[in-house]
Image (cartoon, rainbow, N blue to C red; front, side, top):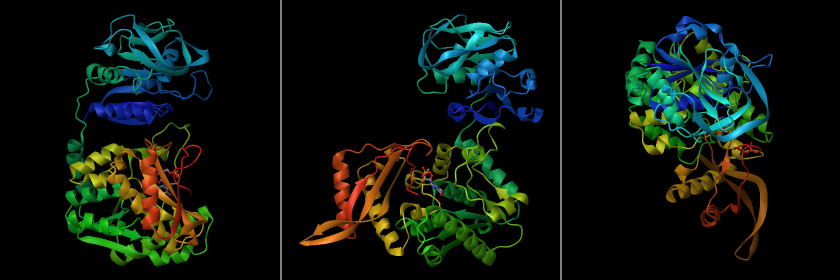
Length: 515
Ligand code: XMP
């Protein structure tokens, strides 16, 4: 399969470049921009992109590509910092602007080039930079200028291209066309990346990695592990596949039953549903400190896992994981050496995973995919829209949605309120417009009237956000009518809830979950 390589110098839009090119139909892989060059990196590579960066080429610690990339003979495209980097590395000059240039900017062509095939002169590009080109490198031909007559595009005879603007950003007119011109026209990559092709390939890969061994997968009920489960059951004899699901007592309403139904439909034969509600709730009794709650849940999860696995499997079985491409990058395997590691708290590093990794017994069949590609793969595997379109759910479950101490009663109340909220969103056709929605049970009792009596009921907060990846989030702007109706449905059907509020905080500064 042809592929495009991106050297990442730490830009926020590197992932976006990769996604855009994959949408065009060409597999794209990201490497740290300052990685030492190895010829093996070029296997099946048709072209290379240098990304943007928060650094300036003149900074002492700016990421520098190995010079060998320039000698590969493959087409290269520098974007923003990549453009400036190539210029500086070839004897041109870059200068710092007094004011950052940010936003739309008209581009006028100075010379015909294959990079701008089918793009009209004067199109509006998207700029975001603090440095600019003072003088192009001697062998670079100017192909485009900004409104202020500054070089924003060059082409060198050995097929090196640079552009100052960001074609990957949706505000850039003809951005996809420019990327496609580079990827398919100039680099000649074939559009062979799609989920059908990937499914065929990954099925063989899983079968050959596994050989005669058994495979264990821990199912959380989320999209990723469900897709891995479906894939394993397609790729391997079902008797070799062991699926374990631990119910901590802090799952959503009917979640465990639904998980069981889905997995049985997929042909699971070794399905272990572990009811660990009592163990978890008694370990958490009386604990209110958020980090302490998370720690207890994380540790106990590992203990229960190890206990339950030991009862069923031993020896050198394989462990399958639903790790995504973004997880690999976030945990520091894909970004530049000096780039900030942005890994969140989310992936539990269990001793089991570490042991299996050391022994080479891990399979991660989603590790090349972005979330939306995982959803598509799920569809190709026959999973329903209700499964692949599910909102994310945190590992510690309802525990992070019940500030203060956790009891079974509180979990039950929250489960009921949350189920009303979610079913209303589905009924009103809002569920798919929202990235994540849920209720939170506040540690507050507020007064209300029930008949003639005053009653102290719980307060429930509704949360609904839109987001791309959970890193930032905006509040979903409900119609007031929907809010009012859903609020009264919650208080009418969950007796213990006396008041409903709507959380109108974006992320940042708030997080999506309350703890
Ligand atoms: P926050 O609350 O950090 O959440 O803004 C961002 C996204 O991550 C989910 N989340 C978690 N997922 N284990 C998980 O698997 C966790 O401990 C965890 N904490 C938050 C959250 O639901 C949201 O989608």
